[in-house]
Amino acid sequence: MEQQQKVENRQDKIKGVFSTQSLIKVGTGTTQRKTVQKSYWYAQELDDGNVEIQPLNKNYVPSGPKKIISKEELLEKFKPEPEFYTYEVLPRIRELNKTIARADRYRMRGETYSAEFEYKNALKVDEENIRANFGLGLTYLERGDTEKANDIFQRLVKLDAAFEKEHKHLFNEFGIKLRKNKMYNQCLEYYKRALELADDDEHLYYNIARCYFELKDFQKCREYLNKALELNPDFEEGKKFLAYLDKKGLK
Image 1 (tube, one colour):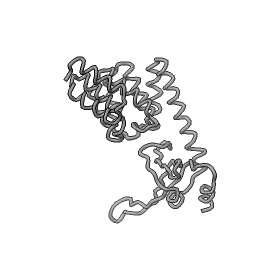
Image 2 (image 1 turned 90 degrees about the vertical axis):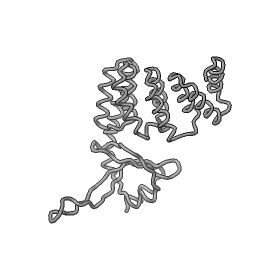
Image 3 (image 1 turned 135 degrees about the horizontal axis):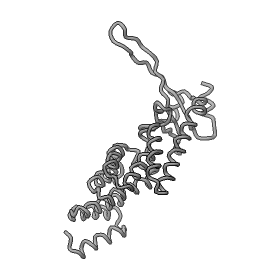
Image 4 (image 1 turned 120 degrees about the horizontal axis):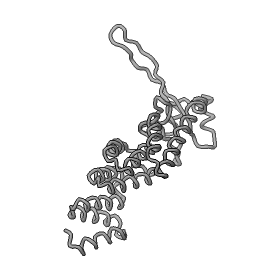
């Protein structure tokens, strides 16, 4: 309780590792018994005062789906683990980030095989890491290895976190590379998946229109351009694209 009060009374926002315990049944019949299972969570207080929590994986790094809870729920149901965070989790997070940063540098220099090696090392620690998955996918696309890139695409399109604002730059770059590698159907699935999570972005409709243009489905292309312009009537790229279709008589 004292530890909880210390966390609650701090001026800084909450950031660290907490644990929960639950009773689970092990075995069957007469050998069945109950045991306590301990789970670890990475918690970070948001600007609105709520707390975002994410489970730690077997390598003790935050991985998997995040969820939002109140600060009151965190302090009532979760136990702070400051030493575990400082000596176990934080060094592993830092090492993972260094590995990804190394991979990014290799990719930027065009050293795709070294980049691939480092991204794969990162994914051994956290197979759902968004930066590492995007980086590896971009590496394959830059190399023209569409088969391996498609494997990464199939993984990314299932991860909601891939479409969060913090990854917008990587999201955009990956979409452009899919299109440049003529992976139009994957490109469509990718952008439509993003629409499921945010349907108020005219750029997504515009990018879908571009995919349909490449597939020579000009009716669908116009449909998505019109949706983009419904959202933003002043969207210049959309207006220019429609004008081009009209000039060429593409229906």
